[in-house]
Amino acid sequence: MTDYATMNEMRKQMRRDLPAYAFARTPWCAAILIAANLLIGALFYLDMRYALPWYATGALSLFLGYVYFIIAIVAHDTIHGSIAKSRSQRYALTYLGYYPFFISPHLWDVWHCAHHSRTNTQHDPDANPCWHEAQNNRFTRLLSWLMPSKTNRVRGVLFYFYWFTADAQTMLWNNSGFKELNFESYGFNKRRAILDTAAYLCFWIAVFFLIGPVRFVFLAVIPMMIGNAIFMAFATSEHIYLPRTRVNDALDNTVSVKVPKIVDLLTLNFSHHVEHHLFPNMSFVHTPLARAWLRKNMRGRYLELSLPQALKIVFETERLYKDDYVLVDRNDNPQCAVDTRDILRRLRPPVASQQT
Image (tube, rainbow, N blue to C red):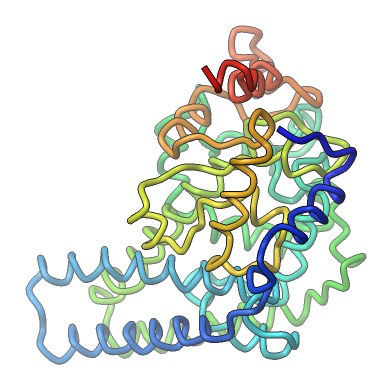
């Protein structure tokens, strides 16, 4: 392992070591969004035109959930600038990825920018809430009651199926009072985000009347829930059981997860999360290059574990920070408290032991 004084120094070294194309935009990925949306339209038409039996519609519903997840991942990359350069182009493409989840491109731009600049700090919009905040804020108590944890397994599993969409609505309607986020400092225009959301609502109302309530459940609601669950299965495995940090260092506050290569292919390398936090505008096509560099040069610091292991930790820990290190339940039960530094030590065995 090589020691670097700061994360920026390490990033500069990675830029020197990795090929120049690793940092190039991949505009051809916009074709994934366009093709996926054409496929969605074709599948809607297929089900309407041929009145598929319930089991075929059920299988179609599952597949559409995966497609909804894929377009969300490409939209996530798009807003970071890995596909298009101009903001107007990014927003136009992102509309094609987030309409199933009711997420305004403008809101996502601001929300996700805040997450990257404040990763796993007290004011990260995606970090666990504080225990002290939960004592005074009814919404925070509700959130901690819903999130997956050691004492909240059933509700926690169910929450995965609408968490991403619920998070977006929280950020839209409650961003000023929740965690003192102050989205306005990032240039947030709430009216614009509300108009985006209203346009999505009008679109889905029109679809509802066009295809009818039963098909709407199978082709819109269930796929949205599946897309939510896949997206959040990855998202929750990458931050929420680590210590809260003061310095935004992706090697301390972020985990990448390991999945079979075929799963990485099918999920567009969404498991490469440390890599993404180091280089947010790096296309998912190139993040495996960054992963190979980290595995070679940052053993002992680079955090990586399997997706099942990560989710197991999520359901073995609570979701409220009592301080920067200790996670507790809403009642501050000492038997449920977990020191996240112990988790970090477990995930970071000494380099020498890795080499034997």
